[in-house]
Length: 158
Image (cartoon, rainbow, N blue to C red; front, side):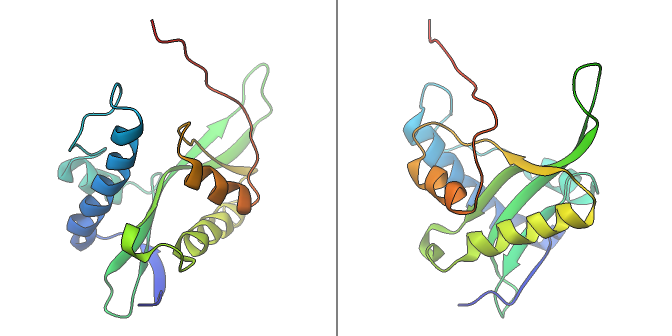
């Protein structure tokens, strides 16, 4: 299976996106069962329908020759600027996933580069995302894509 295209997600993609959301959630719940419920996922099907309809929250999918979803990138268009922050637009990658059986085929790289081009075409200043501590493969992947640490979120469990 090779990537045939990257396109915006459609309603018909929801079952496959749901499968991938479960894969991502399992990584998180295995690492942080104190925060993530086992067997759950980030979005319901109704929430996915709403997100797909929202132009400020594009979901891009990598699809094969049969138009089957191989991976996705959930994005959020954001604007920053106030008394202390310079005005700028950004694309926040809320979630990026490639099917665990298809990893190592540069699908994640293709999705990330697509989002980067999308952000440039929209005139954004940057692309941002969060990675959970302990997700070493994701951290290594994003570093290999040229991302660097912008800020840290720290915690003290009490």
